[in-house]
Image 1 (tube, rainbow, N blue to C red):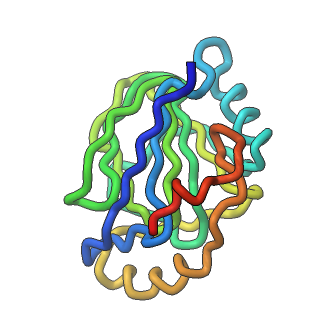
Image 2 (cartoon, rainbow, N blue to C red; image 1 turned 180 degrees about the vertical axis):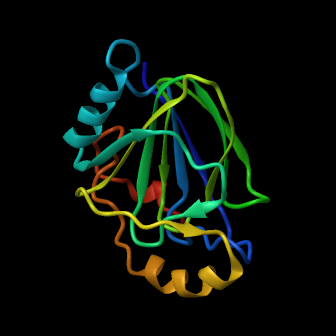
Length: 168
């Protein structure tokens, strides 16, 4: 059975720039669970060209990455994450789910189970930056976000990212 995919187009809210070219993308039931799920998810992302992986949680404050896209895979537990900034939608993710977070898209852990384990990775193994959601940081970040190229491959499905997935 193919995973369920949801696109979330998030507008600049004056605090978090989000990404005008690319929506966030959630994947339900698309990643390995059980056993050593963290290593299996890391290998899954790497097969699709997404590496420089880490295993941890999600920061409990609004932030974004202005120089790189990020994929998160839930290896264990569950989490509620607010996307797009303080007024954005809250998505619930559980083991086996993933979310592609384009450069500039805000994200913040609202609540999580005690056993939460998250795997993160970046296209081509790129390094990541961390920008807290403030009005002052937003102005500088907009130019950096505009320079981030669209990823070549979907980190979960492995396909070239379809034009239909990209925000117009």
